[in-house]
Length: 385
Image 1 (tube, helix red, strand yellow):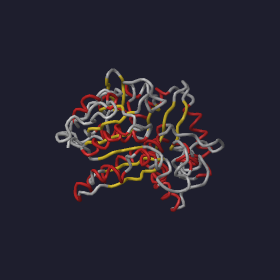
Image 2 (tube, rainbow, N blue to C red):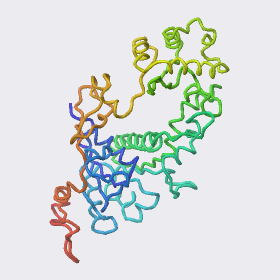
Image 3 (cartoon, rainbow, N blue to C red):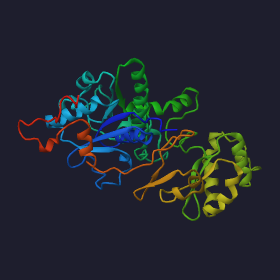
Image 4 (cartoon, one colour):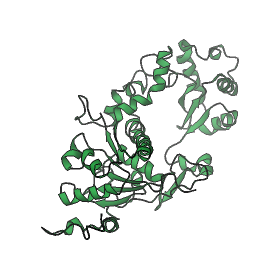
């Protein structure tokens, strides 16, 4: 079967972080994503062309959106597209002449995805920020880290990618389905702060059920529970234990020779958690990681090794499933999720402006960098639509 988003065309206005992640998700599943890159690039963290995994599988054209002829090219591309995604601060797209009112007038079925940190309105809407700032007001950041230490930034996984790019991809596909039923497009106001808050839904459930204590490192899922934590081994490597359910906990303590130890009888006695955790830390520190893998891996007690990015692709499970692939010699995660009996889109590395001539030819446009004063931008206005 063909990729699930084959036939969908998306215009992506260059940005960093969450909007490119959304574009990657859509391209990974077959959408044709045309990225409008900026002259000189847009991402200070990705200077090397052909190495940015987030930008894989795109077509690219560089346009200076401060020039009216470039804006008109974007508008013409939008007329051929199902959707557009942008990650500007509120009001920027409007000032450039490519806001939703303008573009949806030319394509009423357009899905217009807006990715911001704080959202399109509210007292912080026009303020600068990054992932760490957006997750800090959601109650999420405060729960991450050791009890006696400041909160720990969780990379930029929660705001940028989970609450941002992935949420925007979900919103985009939802709005696309609605547009195909009704013929009417949608504007998506995707805020990373909102998305991070939504990802905390399970923690709110624990709180409402009296199963959440304020403060870091005191709860079931934040490293406070001795049976849901990471431990250092004698060789400096780490393991992860996730034995929450009673049967998995029983297998863990039995495998470690602790089944008759009074300290480990009452799994959920939080008053004993610090002592239990210290005891387990001492046990795991007494041997190398290979020892614990040999003892616990086959006991089905929610045990795993903590692997680095260098180690992860070589893990037997990852190899068996083909969880990592190469494109142009660069290792990267395979597109996810998978669909049964559906081909994956083999990633191709992005090159800035690599599709300029072809994209302009498809809409009958003259290269705006070659347009002299008064020269027609369009080669053939009739055939170009």
